[in-house]
Amino acid sequence: MRKPGARTPSIVPRGDDQDIYLVVDDLGRLGRVWREADYEATDFETVVTDLLDGQYNNPIGIFSFNTAEGWSRDVSEDIALELHRRCDLEGCDIPPGLADFIKRHEPSIRQLSLRFGLRAS
Image (tube, rainbow, N blue to C red; front, side):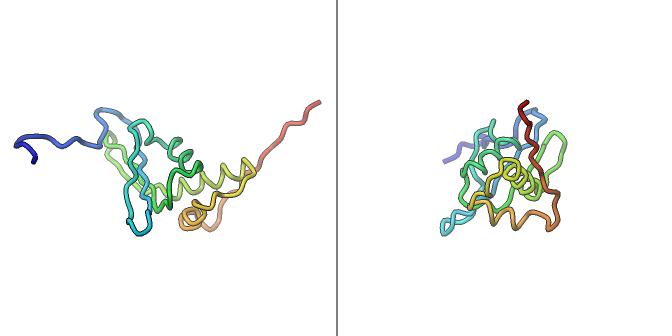
């Protein structure tokens, strides 16, 4: 039982002016959840890398907020574009677990990323 006057820990960072990224993941019959992440693992780069590494079952949406600046927004389209861009640059297929997410959130028209190779003399 909770003691009177006891405070519930906040998920909001204290005094940090940083963008936090949280992923909604579909666990099938267990339902949809906000995926738990370490405090240091809620930045754009870590979320993109974790998605590409298969850390999520079936991502539904990705949302970002910054309490110091007072904003929040759905960044699913931005993440989908970045995932597709990185796969293009690496010359690899989109991981199967991300195909539906990218299809749902990527705009129908997008700029293709091209790889440029250096020739050895």
